[in-house]
Amino acid sequence: MIRSSLLFLLCLLSTAGIAQKAPTRFYVKLSGVVTDHFSGDPIKGAMVRLLKAGKTEAEVVTRGDGRYSFDLDKGWRYAVWYSNEGCVTKHVNIDTEEVPPYPDVPFYEMDVQMTLFEWIEEFDFTVFEQPLGEAAYKHSVRNVSWDMDYTERMRPRLSKTMDEYEKAYKGYYKRRQGRRPPTTKFDRPKEAVPADSTVVAPRATDEP
Image (cartoon, rainbow, N blue to C red):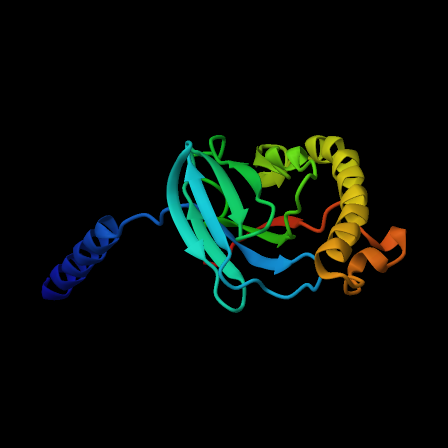
């Protein structure tokens, strides 16, 4: 009888412990590195700003490694803005509104590597007023994924802008410095140069 009572008490304590344990909050882990478009070096002092429903939620000033990281809640629309003094500002949009109440994994992981390059006078950078990428939860893949249709629509515009920027940048550099600009990746074969060097690759993981 005593043994049965002890077992019953242990079961009660175990159940109480489970009941008191708070559920793990789901989130989207967004991280990446901000680098220089030409050299590929990490940028120290770049500002990465996270907007949640149009309002600033968090800001990170990158250190020497250029890294940044944010945790995004489900059920919101986010914009991530990347800027640095004297550089062209870029941004991406991430929509977590359609993430289900009980996702398959504790969190989704998104890796956004962003490059920044110098702003020059009298050049049309209006294409960068549009987001470089649009990401949202897709039920078909049960993950936060990039809108590839949007990406393909943006690709020719970005490619044209960067081709024109190559020529303008070299001329601008010559006028300002009076010498040939340093070798950049624009000097590589055309097939090796993407329309824009921003790399966005989301992935899901079941690792906490």
